[in-house]
Image (cartoon, rainbow, N blue to C red):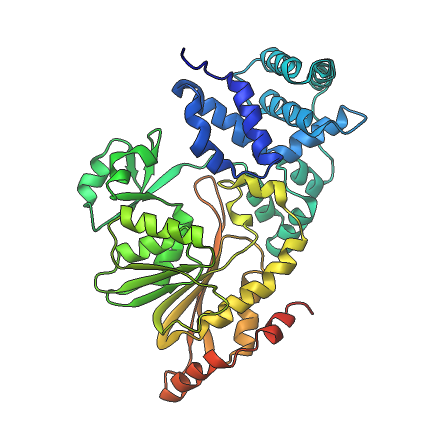
Length: 439
């Protein structure tokens, strides 16, 4: 007997429950379960799935205006995914979205289907009214906590804050990076599913980059253009040694290694299962100059000295909300308090392993001056023999995520500086450094 295909909205509902109630990563859920749906249903199912997560705050706000009590978490998810369709998917008639929700509620919750029907009918009758205050309106409209909207407005101004909030809900294109070791420009961009951006990057227009022959053959990888900017900013030269201290899953490490001839990349991460992702991707891309290892970036005592170091530290991820909407479900101001000392400690440790004439790039995928410019400033205050060569903030837009990057080097290139740097490897006082960020 053939297995019966799942109802699409029931599938979406179960997917959202897995992410919102159980903490499953949305991208991993899709990877493991999307093929359960007929191929012609997958684009719409994906749009409703991600759209509900992206707009969770707005949908929850609408629910609160049409109920006098907080719904059961499972019913709340069903209401939210239906409200998303009512507000954003004009090609789906409102009555059809509501009818599908009520039928699903009847199967899953029995009599509670009447409650679901009542709330949704109320939503249809009354137009959504956003707060009149500018910052509160941005917060609700784009499902960003008010404290974060205020932080962005304080750091970057109202115009940028609105841009970042708006683009957090963008449906970004998929971009692919050419592996120059495996395929030339002409052949790569001759493929009808790849639109040229520059010599290395293209916009992928097909249905699945991971299933494309170029991907399976190790000729291309998926990467956001903003992320690739960090690789270019590192400015690696052929023959150099590179350390990537927080490398997993290895996207930037691979991009660096593809552009090296005789040089090599040491890519490390603190989690063993994530290091396996680096190794797997290196094999796929046929890169023998990538050496992956399990290593805590706060303790690199067994590492040597490198020409280039990429310090892409753990961060709040405010710049990648469009591609990682799950972050919106977990945004808390106290997260920042735990990350600042960690970032400082990793930067301090990594800097001790840079050759005298080398260059280090500190980068994040977030938009927050405390994690970005202020971290670099405090490091330089503690290390007057270091200098900032250049820094860039890549703000997110309708095509890419947001990132920050700063390239650092030593002012003096003397043997004394080299000897002093080697001594620093043994004499870090990490607790003292971390305490500076708790004051």
